[in-house]
Image 1: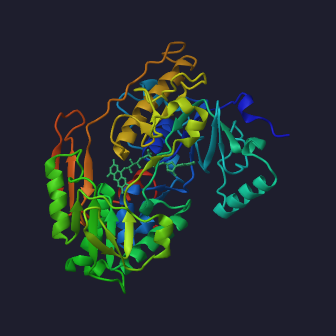
Image 2: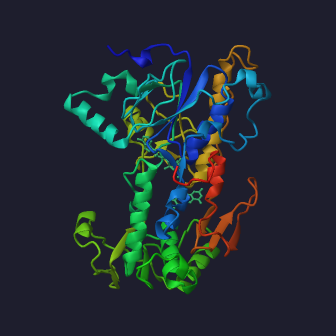
Image 3: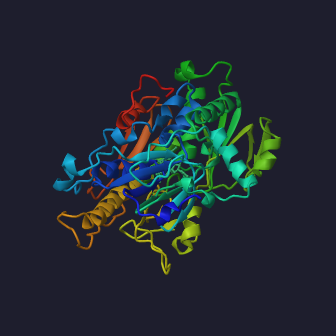
Length: 478
Ligand SMILES: Cc1cc2nc3c(=O)[nH]c(=O)nc-3n(C[C@H](O)[C@H](O)[C@H](O)COP(=O)(O)OP(=O)(O)OC[C@H]3O[C@@H](n4cnc5c(N)ncnc54)[C@H](O)[C@@H]3O)c2cc1C
């Protein structure tokens, strides 16, 4: 009979981090280095590699770089993490004798399927119960095998709850599952091989298209429009084009608002508008499109068709890129604490980054929510998720240390840190080497400043993230 992992006392207490991207990854890397003995991080992500999303549009347009945006998690807990927040760790925690130094922290490649009180469940058999000292790092399982296993269980009428080998107990939970991305970035890929194949297929579709319609001009639409135009319509970049491509291309970007990136200064709009028009992109602002359904779209794939804007402008295209629509991955938490979701499905949070569970009677003070999925009253961005994670780290550490025998705060109430939303900041690329940014010159500066650049590398500093994750860049296929 499988034992119930959640009902058994565990010699090692897990801080389970769901989602190893910009927000969850930051929480996991620092916590694994500062948690005292008896605690460890279990990082769960359905991706086999860290997906460096910022560069996805670029490597989906320019061929030959897709391998660079998938970084193995293999050295994650030994990586040279950037320094923890200034308030952490307190001196007593840096003593190697009292810390695990990340050795027992674990990355689990699996999809999360359920959250319960004190445990989570994943979509594959972990091979070990992730409960105690004896637990070994989990072996990688082939995605096909996982799918087959899921089918087998379904055929047997079993639920995941039937096996405690799918269940991981937690003392603290960090929920950082982000958002479902707009269509060009959505992929069922869970491995590097499949992710690279997805991006290479996108590169090929773009190369073969004669006329491209980009619907939506947030940062993503702007990046695709300017990269495609710079690659295919700028003679200086001919050497970077794939063989047999169609060049030049007609590129149209349509936006329902009459201003680009309205959260930012007028100068940002002006720069985006100037660059796009200089690159020959047809810019249509203040117009809505009645787009065909995805099913309709599939029937006419690669054929030239025409769409008429509500104001009567006709746009011809043979490739449509829908660059709108991002929705939160909050369903799992919502099933456990329905009170925690706001009307758009984002998770309500307190300034401590703990979930705001309203009237819920469940135990929720050990659940933290960070990154794009959180309604943190700040723009959705990697850097804001990272900053929220810093607060989570401090608060989990403060709670943990109040329970550690002999610590300075043993038996006291934890002192909670509070997240302060920062003003909107952005860096948007405007072609293969150009960018415009509006950033705070220092963390506590009052006013953002605008900077324009025209000498960025085409593969956009990808190797920095590999070094940070402790991975050599010699073999990009790992
Ligand atoms: C093209 C582009 C460029 C960008 N550029 C910038 C930039 O320059 N600066 C900036 O600050 N921000 C930028 N952003 C925004 C930034 O990427 C997001 O805000 C950031 O990814 C949010 O991080 P996150 O950790 O909250 O979630 P995500 O990055 O969405 O990660 C969620 C993680 O959860 C995992 N996951 C989801 N569901 C499950 C499940 N059921 N089981 C297991 N794992 C699961 C996913 O695999 C993923 O690893 C950019 C975004 C895009 C699309």
